[in-house]
Amino acid sequence: MRIATWNVNSLKARSDAVERWLERAQPDVLLMQETKLADSEAPELPFRMAGYELVHHGEGRWNGVAIASKVGATDVVTNFGDGPVRDSSAGASVALGEDDFDPFDEARMVSAVCGGIRVVSLYAPNGRVVGSPFYAGKLKWFERLRRWLDESASPDEPLILGGDLNATPTDDDVWDAVRAHGGTHVSAPERAALASLRDWGMVDAYRTFVPDAPGRFSWWDYRAGMFHRNEGMRIDLLYVTKPIAGRIVWSEIDRQARKGPPIPSDHAPVVVDLDETGLAFEAGWEGALSRIKARTRPRPVKNRA
Image 1 (cartoon, rainbow, N blue to C red):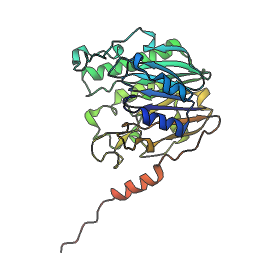
Image 2: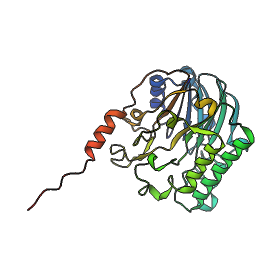
Image 3: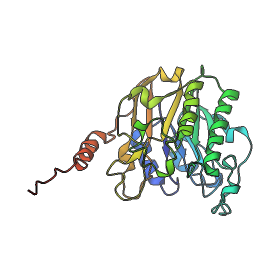
Image 4: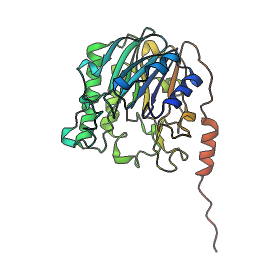
């Protein structure tokens, strides 16, 4: 079984890219984030035509999470089971103030049982700046995720948490922890939140198969040159329980999917294969990293004597 996670950064804007990637990589289950659609707008027909059942949890113009599955999708849970979220389709929350921010009033979690595995698509809050109400809300959201695990799951059961968690596990997962914007994604409390998931019984699926791969990231800002200089972060994660970790035979981050045209998502899909490898595809890392290293090699100092 092939399972992938991808922050598509608008399922409407990236619909063609998603359809092409489904054909190219042929995942059995794709977890998506930042769909930016209301449930009534979810493109069920194109997914059905491609052989997928689509489960979508959205609020309109912002956030939104989904699961596309070829192996069924039952026992759906949204928003940690805490009830409905607001509808932002009218744009009422575009200029949401810090005092009004509530991460539990947003579509950031959907879960279903697919092929005998409980999968969870997650979109963690960004946090914006360390110490802000948005940052505090992010940490509270992670606390709610951990509490949901405590209340609703067991580390002895097959479970996969996947998504844009907006935090890096270690300094090896960011191009430069000091220069990271606002200090978020690299702060000790955020990394402690990820560690809490691992302490509960989760394993970083990508690191299980690729334990030492510096410079392999899943997100790069759109700002000029950051992708080409490989100034990115590994914030899109697949955390799995040990019954799943023992089945991993391959994992990859598909750098090729970050390329355009048209304008791609600023995230790349992260893929894990269980039991047997799926359809082979070229992720584009080997040549890219050698070119990046050559471009960033320090220039020799000229002797002006």
